[in-house]
Image (tube, rainbow, N blue to C red; front, top):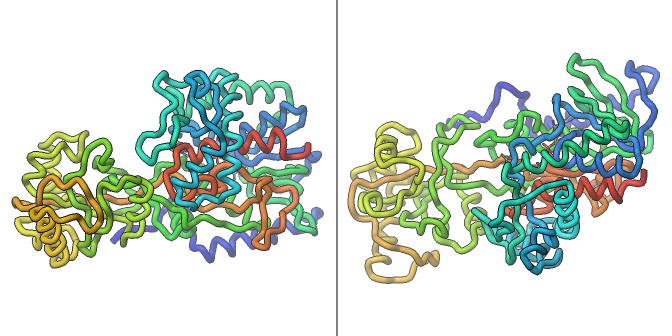
Length: 509
Ligand SMILES: Cc1cc2nc3c(=O)[nH]c(=O)nc-3n(C[C@H](O)[C@H](O)[C@H](O)COP(=O)(O)OP(=O)(O)OC[C@H]3O[C@@H](n4cnc5c(N)ncnc54)[C@H](O)[C@@H]3O)c2cc1C
């Protein structure tokens, strides 16, 4: 049985999470006299989280001469940029201009809505498309560069209509390399006060529900109040916290890739302030990965190459019920992945016969044939059977249904009949025993659920009312900008662009 509990972290359920958030609110509404903390003078802006979005918001507010406080839980700023691919999608960049690529925010917006099949929150997608170009151009002014073969239309997932996808040679670190000196400059000038090893544990609310600052806990557990006229939640997501991730998405965190600091603190703070969460349904897994075990989160054992644009597919994909459920060579990667996400247990099996094993290009390109064959002897995700029934029993796929599915596929291929799911590449029927099945399990590296904000990035209540003085940017907004798809650059780009927008324009300092 999968082990969904995680012993490093408290266990959350959706109910306990909401109850916890309510308790935090009660704490923050205690009278000042009983709070042991000390109060500093109110800053124009307090930013919770010195990561991707938070650093940029701080830099742009500091550029305007404001005094900004950045509260950072770890010892260093940078957040997820230290491990992120840092791949960005932006229209109207100097990098496009240099190559004569015509693009516009409108075209970018239309691409986002196409790739996400309309599941992106329109005003968030629009904000991303409209403000990403100037953000990237600012990074370029700071010295950010890209390899010569970029911008591209995309890599693994659905392509943009024009080349606008970029990333630095050192991935996220290339972005951090230009941001950090700029951030440090304003720390040195005294515009940015950086508190490290400091966790925001609560928001300070007045009687009308307006946010007046943040309660901060240091590494020794000592609490203090940081008063601010405006507060930005930029704490990242919860993909480092398996139980919260599962409680909020209804999907286990099958693999933990995000930083341990991505605990979902911002969700708790936003809920406590009266905000609400949306976009859990935008969960969109990555597929092709084979898990090491059934103990979640599990490290990957390896990856199957299931991008048919790179390796035309020879295998069939079946779910636990033994059914084919998707056109394996579907032209839209996003559409394919959305269908995979609907399968029981967020998994499928690539099923094939001995002939495919012998003749097809390797399904696991990073492995030797010996490694692959060995895995069928011992790995829990790799199965072999002399008959389809035996394979089904061993793999945990409905054996009778599997046999029927393969028979129907074979008959269509042999008789030249069209495929009911529309598949076009069907090189051979699956006839020669032994038969094989390799299980793929969904995984992700970020959260999809997020705090609801309006087009000014202000937190809103479910009735649409603004929570005064409180803003959010970055992964804490979830998959609102990119929707239910792997829309290229859908997290890093809005995090940076929205941070810039808040610090430069939106917040009155
Ligand atoms: C391996 C990997 C690859 C990725 N590749 C891409 C990619 O190529 N393109 C893309 O678009 N997206 C990518 N993403 C996602 C993207 O990098 C993140 O969504 C984005 O960087 C998050 O930015 P953020 O500012 O919201 O959070 P972060 O950059 O994580 O910053 C949050 C900061 O808040 C701090 N913090 C947390 N809680 C508190 C608290 N209570 N008090 C004070 N501070 C707190 C954290 O320590 C951290 O420094 C990737 C993610 C991963 C993990």
